Length: 217
Image 1 (tube, rainbow, N blue to C red):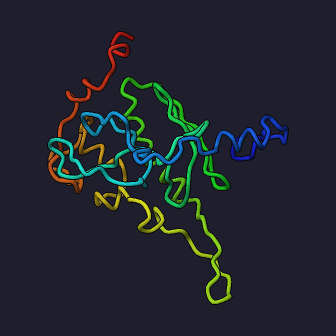
Image 2: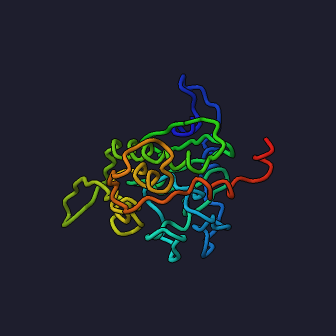
Image 3: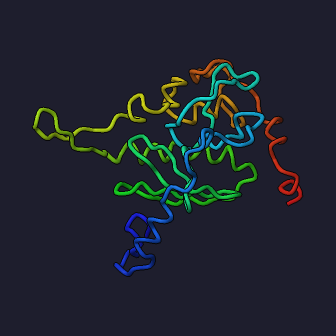
């Protein structure tokens, strides 16, 4: 409905175009630290990493982690949606409290994924490869005029050097490799090389990230 500017699958108008534009409008202003999580999680498994591209990397490393990670998952927060950086363009969406995400890449794709998870942070990160697959298959191109002749060209991943490419930054080709490094909770070979060095065990540390009310539930 959102990708069709308020129209339902049968052509019936559900929302006005103005309403959809309001949902996707910029409401966060241009604060200096708008792309940073207000409370930096105590370990990287508590970060909302759901895409491949980010505004910038944090200058501070987590304890025991030999690399830096993004400061936050979105460059802005609008009136009704979070703004994410896709491989080839801006993506609108929102994350649920206990699981569930929806993404809309105008003119390209949209999807909704729902679940219920005790530790939603790691589950969010696990969906990154889904979003990356949609992005990689969208074949988004733009027109460019060079010397008076118009031609079509693909937008480079993360805008070339405009934004940080997490995969290139870590030398990985999927978020699963980062998750296997941070939280090797599923059976796998101990000598498996995932490209990030020796794996760290964060299972016990993750418990500290769970609010008391969720422990009660």
